[in-house]
Length: 160
Image (cartoon, rainbow, N blue to C red; front, side, top):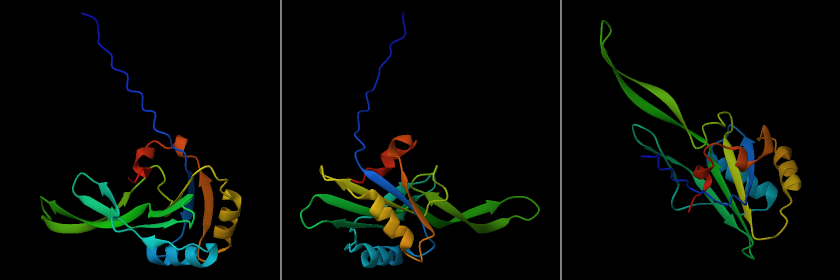
């Protein structure tokens, strides 16, 4: 009997812009800086982003802003979080100890601290102006555009 192949056509449309932000501030401070310098009104979402690890579920804070006309949606999300992992060692120095581990929303972007996802309904988003304004903020180390199509786990960027 011949092999039966099932082809899944994953035709998800990733029609959003993605900006990587390197910054060592806490998430609420990054949102505040973006609100001040980009005239946004980012507010904490009621439901944060859940990342599932083999041991537990981790929550990454996220902030959202919808423009007054509803044409653009800005979502700021943490790309990484520090967690405490309890381990047990057996042997001469047996015992239980904890160590810190890092959980990432997009593991292939290991050095990116925050992601700014911009969804717009047919309007031209001034990406270059936004990146220039982000790089002008003294607390932000750097910001640059990412191509969502080149990411391996781009499904993690769908927050609905």
